[in-house]
Image (cartoon, rainbow, N blue to C red):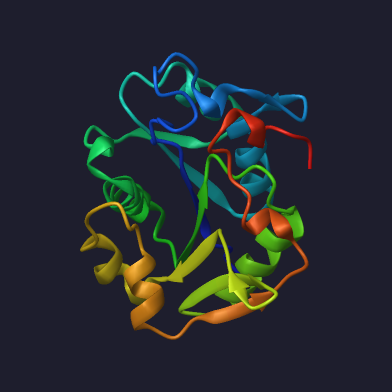
Length: 194
């Protein structure tokens, strides 16, 4: 039996560039008949066996929406210390599932094509240590990691996330025709239909 990777949805960022005043949560903005984060989560849920979604304390209802979709929601109390805190929190939370790999997606990247997610999951299932989508020679997101990198993932710190691992270890590049691997929601003008 082939086991697909566990999806990790990072949804604990504050989105300060989207709304410096902190009044509008970018993850809860409407997009494609849902919200940004729900659109991202649905795609990841379709490509992986389970999804662990990380939210911050006082998440304005993000966690409730993700739980309603079937995500395993966990609160990262130190999410403000950087993306690595959310990622390591999610990895630790997922260990009860005994994952062989993780596909790490960002809650503010709803434009990624579901086919891209499936291709990355397939690469991880086939044994890739790290899998990343590539378009026109540029790597994008999401990125997958095999269990061989568990210790390195748990040792991450700061806001660079797992970028250091992609520089230090071989990466299986998965060629895709998907500009969504570069598109995130940083500013209100980014909320356009794909």
